Image (cartoon, rainbow, N blue to C red; front, top):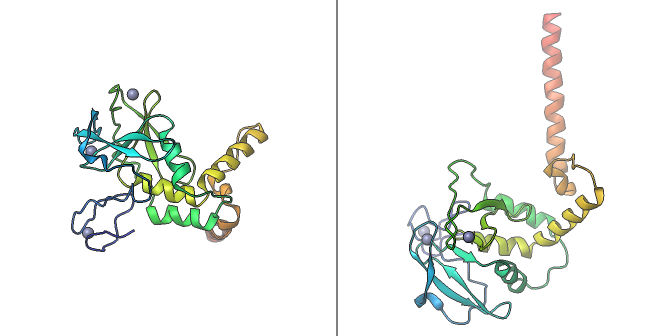
Length: 223
Ligand SMILES: [Zn+2]
Ligand SMILES: [Zn+2]
Ligand SMILES: [Zn+2]
């Protein structure tokens, strides 16, 4: 994805351009809005900037308002609202597009695990849990069990793309498989993408062979 202001590629998982510093407002581009609710302030504060969140009325799931920060573009969804947005903003997806899913992870970058900040729920102010939203979405949401989920700027956009590529179907199939197996899962995450990790696996086998050769040549020298 490129910056709407200067066209430079945006850094992975961020909506702020490194070159012109523009904050790209990409999350609600394809989501139906009833009115531009940017004027209406809500009662909750942004967990990142402490600015008061504004209510944006969405025309999905019978219509509801989400709390959105005008400064960082993060959005807080009450329980069930995010699912409604994903279901209704993406036209019916029937199958998993594995190459697309794999490409998304590459495109959006890998979650940085260092410097993790735990955010407080805008409602009860208790620290929220960090939780991967589905597998392979590349999005870690902040979730309060009682009040909902917080998405940083660009994360809704990423989840919409993930849903469009069949991420939810893939997730349901994965869960069904796990339930069916009825035993601890032994395979690593690469088994989620059987046909697209073949090369990666081949790479691993070559690595192992190289390692074996290296060990053998050391053995040859020693003995
Ligand atoms: Zn820019
Ligand atoms: Zn904010
Ligand atoms: Zn809460």
